[in-house]
Image 1 (tube, helix red, strand yellow):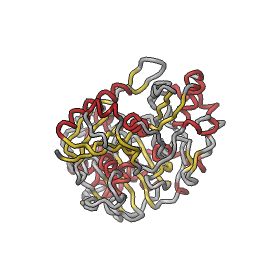
Image 2 (image 1 turned 135 degrees about the vertical axis):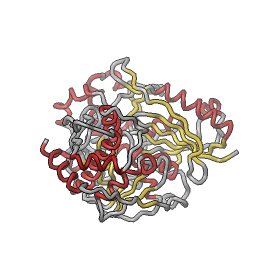
Image 3 (image 1 turned 135 degrees about the horizontal axis):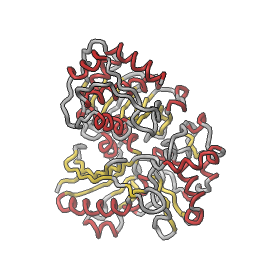
Image 4 (image 1 turned 90 degrees about the vertical axis):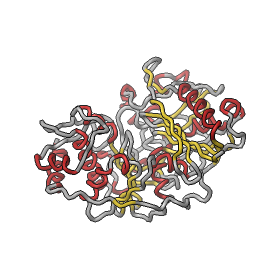
Length: 459
């Protein structure tokens, strides 16, 4: 049987289980929607349904493959509160639940300053600290029963291995709980009285232990299958590019529900809370200047509003028509995060190709965010390069002094999580091959970009 590594990838929209061979190639993938249920005290994720699905998928895979290791990547802004019996003390809150903002006035009194946390104030529950503050105020009896506070990747690692841990990429992901530049907890941890409930910190490359006897019985996995610590998803994508030996400065662009630009080599001094720029923490424990917006959600919304399908054809000539007609698509089309959040998006009157319009919009937004970060050096794309190569080619024209590299990965987040299980990381053979995006030759694109920025900033 082929030896493989299983990666559980819990995105905001979908949950995937991928099997990767010894070269890092995905040889099997299954997915399900990441459902949010509206029942109960607030919208929350269907944790037990995900767990049952995961065990079923692992059991089916174990018949055909020798699964030697498991790692986990998940979206951020999520914690799991566990009681003394190992059950959920409270349902796992969906970070888009806007009622969390009801505690904003009280939370602002204890929230750390941006110049220390590098965590901007975000809507709904996107600051994990605000989630925990709200839960503690709304459900004091249940919160008092919490024995362990897990970051989301480490919760799944604990379910699989029985070993409790905390890891800094999720802890430092706009949570208000961490001081990235000081490599330490923020005072909010003690304000919430959760320091003693946070498991020990481990590096992202840590193997926590083997799968539990219960998991072995349920799935048929080998008893010595190792479970790794888990990682925040965009940081998994960045970890994959670190494994390629890229030298600073460079910027990795992670795409999905969120588009996140991570500028290695940019100083934290460039960050501005008002623009939703922030510091994440890399798998090496270093602060990392980032800018983000809900690009995947916005892309889908622009396609929906223009009656376009996600699999429609989209070519240079379709972009050329938009640029020639000065058909401006102005932000924003999602209310959460980004430099233009909560401003109403605007579409041009006549749209011939909605996917082309959405692609151009993403390119302009990424280009703007790269300027916010004062990003230097190469710009590296993962799976977006294969899913929408025109996006990379537009960036190559918009930023003529920088190379736009394409990893060729079908899922760079998954591959990055796999890299973290390799001996000797970040030295991982086979990660060094990149293609270079050739710029589009669109006439008038720079002038279009200038007009777009002027009107977007004046809105």
